[in-house]
Length: 329
Image 1: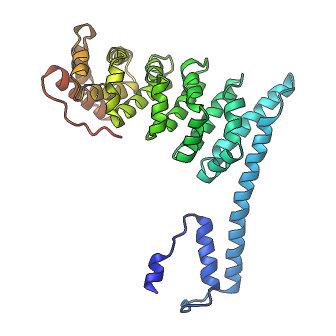
Image 2: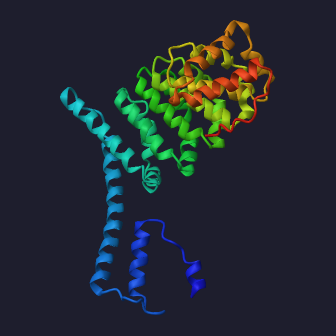
Image 3: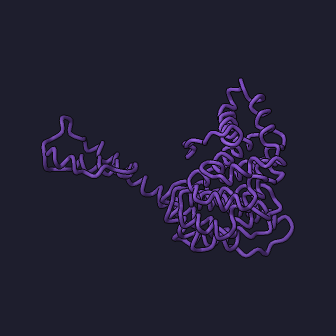
């Protein structure tokens, strides 16, 4: 019996737990449990299991209703048109919430919802529709390789990069970049697409944006990609990224600076070219780092930024090699 218990498949969700409980209560073979399950308890568990199954079906129906809203022809005018846009925005928000459940994200893909989102919503004239569509794609793609591959095969990454780079609405750009990150982080196929579409240049321009959120998210994704894929640092250096990053450091201090300094540390690690770029006298980086170290000392909330400053200063201006920083975060 012990061996049988060891080989038992453990339930992976509430439905599985309830199913196991029902089966245990109705099993006729094997030793009887110390307290046999009453018929009333057994009926309760069966009812609960039916409710779980019904709830899952209800969510699929909700998604279908949302897709019906998004599929409507846009023929209204005036106040009716505004009401219609509100309905579309609510439908996209509902889908994003439902698709935090990975099963729902997969079902939405099978229902054609992602195709509809890309063909009609990402390119919509209303910014509120565009950014909610990008948010939905991010919700579906996060931690779901099956959905990621599907979106990449449908060309979603190029559209999202274009929105990040050119959309007039800052919220659309931020949400689109978030969706990009869900498709390229720890996803080799996505990263190859990202490189083929000159994604690092999009991040460079994002760090020069007027939007604080876009600057921060662009710098964070750059740091993440360089930490995870140091083999691409020469590509980034050839774009003049060091000069651009130092320019960002000269802007008023903000949370983006920590990620920028981390990216610079990645670019100089085991890279004579990276070190040489940082030592360019016209950048004045050594003086900037010395001042930043003085400003940050004693500030507990800035310890990681201070560490990046000191490591970069040692690597570029004190002749000592930069050791492995362990920055895969």
